Image 1 (cartoon, rainbow, N blue to C red):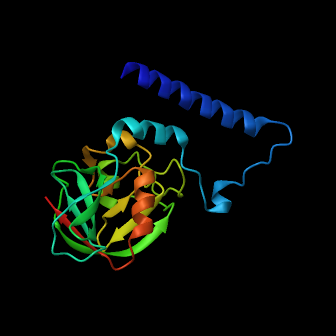
Image 2: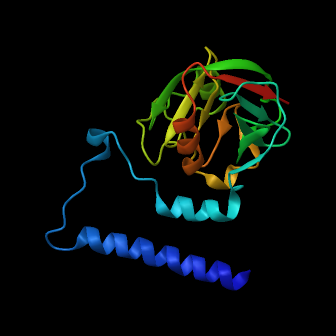
Image 3: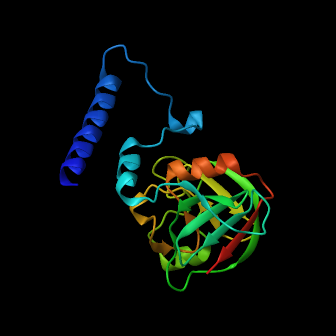
Length: 199
């Protein structure tokens, strides 16, 4: 296990160094500013960390009377299931609300956004006055690569730039996923999909 970790760490370091060298090379094409392009690469180092912290997504047996395309979040299990039909679902690891911020209910996805901006709600700013009042979407944004908005609530299923929080209860009620997983889910579900959150 240790040797596997060391090899992985060296590989990630080599990837970062190679990327930096390519960017600095004479004549190298400069990337467009993220704010102008509206598209961002997923940080390779973030993905590397997720190899050790995230639960690999996979198709699993799953009995449900819900139609395909329904999302079922099991908060206590810290797993999200996308019903695919035929007694199966795609399972993802998630981060959930910390104590006092968990919730349950049925909502629908009312909006989907790539690289969403983040505006902390007033109650969050009261708890954390150090937070920015607004943050543009991008790799450093805690909303991550994609967001799916749930009804008219403040809750979302979204990515994260902190993959080590997947599998933990640390959010203010939102459902966190790794950026790779949230992109995968985003591409599979539609606006109007049902989301059932269970404690």
